[in-house]
Image (tube, rainbow, N blue to C red; front, side, top):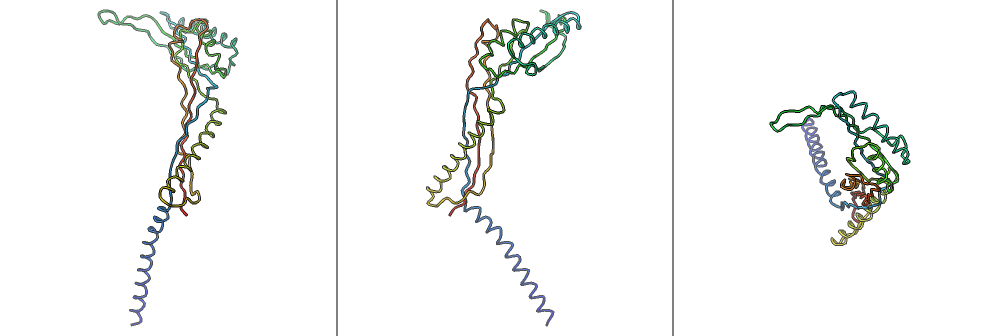
Length: 239
């Protein structure tokens, strides 16, 4: 009899534990339901304060070493012209460099060897965006074959400044959105439970290359603003 009583007590304890375990998720879900979660994306824009240019230097010769030598000489001339324009040596880098056989196809589809083509692409970084046109002219007049890309973007300092501005704007908009939802539902917004940045994006301006193809003297490039967007997610409890 005493043993049966112990078994009965243990069975009741197990049932109580199971009931409590089942009730806890429900309570958690209820707590989660008593909240408003929203996200908001804000966009800010600014004139670019950094430009990146990619200048192509191409040479072709029947002899591979001569092609490379000619390319090296032209590259030196282009670099010197950029230095004279005020670009620091550290802001002139090799983006690409390769040597290939240059082949063209004849009327009958036959392959015709034209020589060895050496291509050297220089990346030029400038913080004086108004000087981009002068840099294009200097590079082309000293030996570059053309400009493959012109990108207007932001320095790290400016990017951080705009990111903070966009985040502040997104946070204010998210709070206002949560408040409007609470008002529409007839409830009161409580304290902030959670907040996180869900995304950040910067969209540089890629200048069209039509103005730089021939690189006429006094080339002018007028950049558009750079856009920065930030998204923030927040969760408020309800009073």
